[in-house]
Length: 275
Image 1 (cartoon, rainbow, N blue to C red):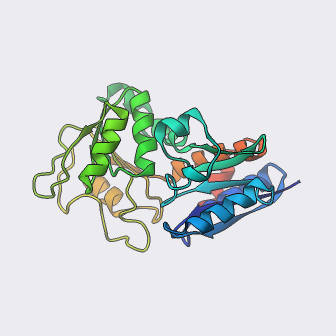
Image 2 (spheres, one colour):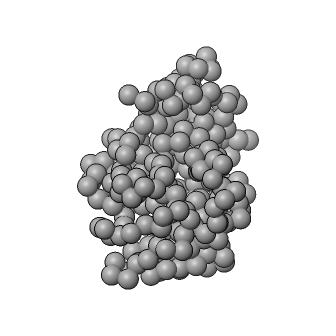
């Protein structure tokens, strides 16, 4: 069998997913390909047409990224309990002739976060702030709450943060005011916005010269460039920080397993994007 897989989103020109999934196919001894399907946010017909190709068996699975993690839901037959609870989808598959929406971002984020903070976790408090309130933020908030973290939200669009906090009931909202914004109480800072992504590598979701808590860990879901401005600033202040490359690898491997039944070796996937 030849697996035809792909990614829906916009823009996609800097995506590493084709390299990762090509490596996964090769490592598992499978034939197949992974294509990019750039679809604009308001192109509902384009989204519908692409999903029809999964339904008729022409495509065997799709990943979903910004800006479609929520807009794709109306075209699916069913959501897994995780995707339903989060309200966002990053993986689409066909099962029993039904289009199923899943979310591997949650498990992928948590697996990589635990690897990154490692032995520090026992000595850390568990107070986190999540920047942003989109589909990726939903997955991260869900993951953190289920891992026992106290979560606060900050978004430039206050109403989105408030809606997300209301959905999960336990998240607090902090107004993102550049003049008064403080991070002193947090041990974990997670950026889920695309700010700082290539080509806008000189941007950061946080104000210039903002002092970060000395014991905080900074996790930026942006993985291109390899060291974002946020990560660079955190490390310059002596903090530990990571980009979302590890999460990208983990969620990709989990999606791949849903589509093919094969669990690809993570070291091979890392190696595929190291250049």
